[in-house]
Length: 524
Figure 1 (cartoon, rainbow, N blue to C red):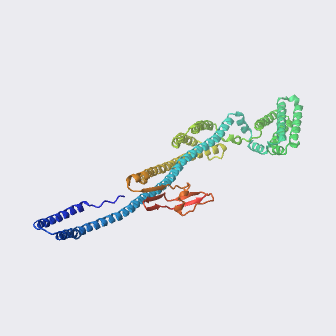
Figure 2 (figure 1 turned 180 degrees about the vertical axis):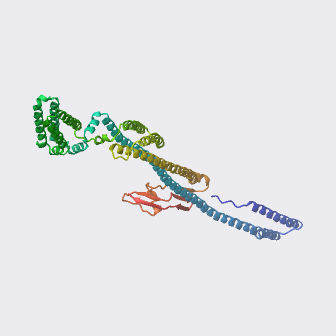
Figure 3 (figure 1 turned 120 degrees about the horizontal axis):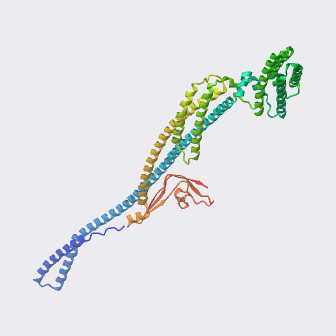
């Protein structure tokens, strides 16, 4: 900085005025001397007096004034020097304030960034929750589809059984439910001998049926044939009861088939002994009807390799009007199943499936089918404990469950959407704050930039050194001395673990200051 020059103009004016007064005084004294003739000695004394007067006047009048003004200038210049030092200190203080403000803004931005990341992660969680709701809806539809498939399997099985008139005749002849249930429980699918013995059983029963046919077509003149056929019948039955079949098959035969077989055989034997043709024909007809129904059922079991048909045991429980109702229910469930399959397929093919679209579509399917299904069930008595009624009751519960699940998922989706909107509002607010603080940070950065500082203080040797400090980065070794850390010769590097701002170093002539925030380092 250049100090101001002393103001000598006034001094020169005062000096000129003083010399003018001296000149005038000397002229007056000189005019007085013109009228006198002085000797040499007197003239020298006069000149000495004039010179003494001149210097004495200068010393007594001008010099004190000049010295006072000079002292005033010195005081003023000293004050300026002191003001310059204070000015330098103020400049550094102001720059430090700007640097401190920069660090505050930087820390504020870091806090906003952390909060932004937190809120954004929460918003992402809500989006993930919406995807989860869609998957829950999808699996609820799949569960309904599975339950519907099981119910349709039961209905179709019932329809297929109802389409076989021979089955209805079987139940009219004799209640074979216990025998069938026992056979299913006794069936050993892993045993080859069981299947072989069961076929031998069927063959023997077929032989008995042929013997009965011979008796039917024998006339009264061949009564001996009756006795022969009866003896052969007893022989076959005795083989069935005592021959070495599979133990479980033998036990089943003795418990469920033999008692009825013996009853029909004894009635036939009694009629033959009485030689009563009408009674013989009646006994044979009843025996054949029972045996034909038994063979029909056993052949069905053989074809299915002993696989149970529980619904077969309940065919006698339903009335003919039930058939049309079951057909209507099956048609309705088939249509619903197709709609569900189409909806699930659309979800699988969609690039970005939307919960609200699929929820509305699922709700439409349920709202159209559920009332119709309930109306149909009013015509049935679901309190009867049967397989068909249980299947319909489970389907009823599944429809009700799906309806509640859709309502519950819609409520959750509304809550999630509201929360998501709140998070988005928070993110927008944080973004505006970040933009504001970023602009402040940029302005402060420009203020502290070396080029701008040099341009603003052209006449000063002012320098500002800005050392950026960021978490996770390498701390510059050149700044170790600022943290009182000696140079490490071990080759370990120090990384910034925590920081409260950047480092700033200020230099102005012989003045030096700095801002060192809290910094935590780790060695690696």
